[in-house]
Amino acid sequence: MSASFETIKDKCHLVAETFDLPVFFINPDGKVIYESLHNHSVNPLYENQKEKFFNPLKFKPNKEYRFPIIRKSVYSEKLILISVFNNQTFQGTVIAGPTLAFPLTEDIINGIINDTRAFFIRDKVFQYYSSLPIIGAEKLINISVFIYHLFNYELLSQKSVISENVEKSEMNTNEQVNLSVSQNLQSNVFHSDRLFEKKLLYLIKEGRVEDLNELSNIKEEETASILSKSSYLRSNKNHIITLITLVSRAAVDGGLHEEVAFSLHDRFIQQVEELNRLDEIRSLAGDVLYTFAEKVKQVKDERYSKTITTCKDYIYKHIYDDINHNDIANKVELSPKYLSFLFKKEVGITVSEYIQQTKIDEVKKLLAYSKTPISEICSLLNFNDQSYFTKVFKKVVGITPKQYRERHHLIEKK
Image (tube, rainbow, N blue to C red; front, side, top):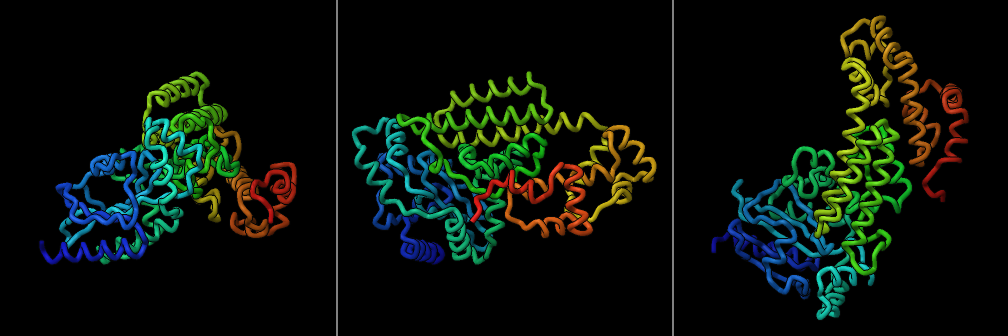
């Protein structure tokens, strides 16, 4: 064996010892070059067959990545996949794990056992899950950054790893748009968090496809309430059916025709019932969100000419900037006077009024979904002073910013 592979084995051993994790190194042909369970056992549901260990990860040994990959198996284990390079030549993949994001409850484990009909090895399955290290999402990302740097001498930022994230290379364009949401939902447990739910449904209602990735809450299905004690798969199916119902209603509120929304609703539920793997359910959650948001966006865009749609998108994307009527006119290459005529004709209000209205909508979100002080919100949205800000807000909303926050704030006060 070459010196480079001996070095890889030494580094794999270092990772196993440092983080107390099982570590494997697999070459591009699929051969296991290094294996260290490090006092951990293989999931008994895999029947100690390595190919069954790799298959639930959709692992392809000849596939290379230029960033760490964090995969979640169909049995809720998380593993880190690191492509290893030597002078830009792909050497193989380090797999570190498995770990759990949260301890699994007895009901969840029983559900998994029932789904896999593993009744005769129940005790082994319980022992296995109780033995897995518990590593939160942020720490797991940091570990992946460390391992990637150890093998490839490139230090990535945590933010860049999150933005690339899980299974991105396997997805089509539509799925990539919704990558973060799919990862955040992890089989759609958002309903247990009212703040996350409100943010999400707002984006669907507004058709903000491009903003779905900005949701910051990382969700794990293990934290969701159990909706079926007899089957973990059934419990997750019930959660996604709840998601489909709420999202379809938000889409109707956003202007999507009821017949279209209900047709999508029924189609997605039929798809849910046909699925038999957790990873497929997680993927479908992303498809649901992207599809409904895109349909709402199409409806909203069809209401206005391309020029006005461009104006509205520009205002939304620059809402935290000090933009004015002339900025918008320059963007669409029209005179301010002619833009005023077109905008008022199609939208019903002036450009300035629309900018103000959009800023107030953003203020309402910050008041409800964040702890940002009102004075800071005023500054962020470029209002002249807090007195003027309060006056405008009350004129549009009917109450002061302070009163709005007291009535609608969703974050627990400390």
